[in-house]
Image 1 (tube, rainbow, N blue to C red):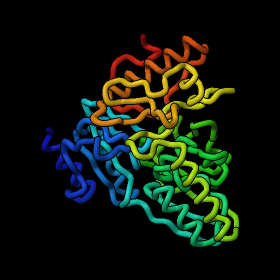
Image 2 (cartoon, rainbow, N blue to C red; image 1 turned 135 degrees about the horizontal axis):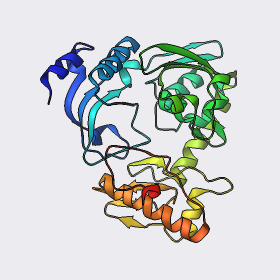
Image 3 (tube, rainbow, N blue to C red; image 1 turned 90 degrees about the vertical axis):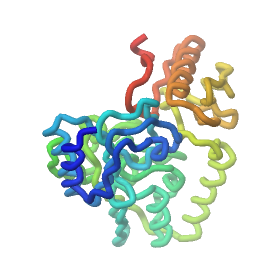
Length: 310
């Protein structure tokens, strides 16, 4: 490792926030991933800016992670700096019907704050296992709701470390995409607009969504949630099931028997197991139905050839 670069990283934040050769399996919901050269947890947006400017100056690759809930990291890990926006940047403030949340705040924490203040409209997101920053980037959604329905504005940072504020209309939300994703901005804070509601009704709705998740999703296994994007006019899980791939296994990775839209780590799965399984599923569904499934899970690091490269 480069001692000089490590010391420069420590100059951007407290040294205890900088880890070398950090296994990413401990930072993804798949519980999979080799070591990152450096793993840094900045305390605030100023430190985020310092880190990305340093990486740019030194020409060292960097990647932003939140809760690692939509991420598959290569078995070889990541050659560069992982900047983790998490607990240190997770402040939540409620004023009237508006919630301001730093990017590292968990969706479940924001949903709990909304419930506490009798604010309705965020119930759909209460069980999404990620941070608001990651959810804003990909316009995450569940049970008929999406982030575009509740986000009013996003404070983000560009590759030069400059801060920008984007209104709802400027965010260009689409299905699992946004301007933030296209421009590779870093989300720092999200402003959410909700409505006054009855606490009991909000609680009941959250509980209903929770029970539906427990009954239909393989929550007992590590996964990254829905593995594939929903193809227009279809449901990914149904296409996979109708192709006869329910329970299909590669190494320790398996198409869930409970919900075919989920790829799970049945135990000891490698990133390459998951990658190969995803490619095989996509190919077989295409052969049978002529529909190409695209991953919703983001891959980081070196993998075998992707579907479009073979």
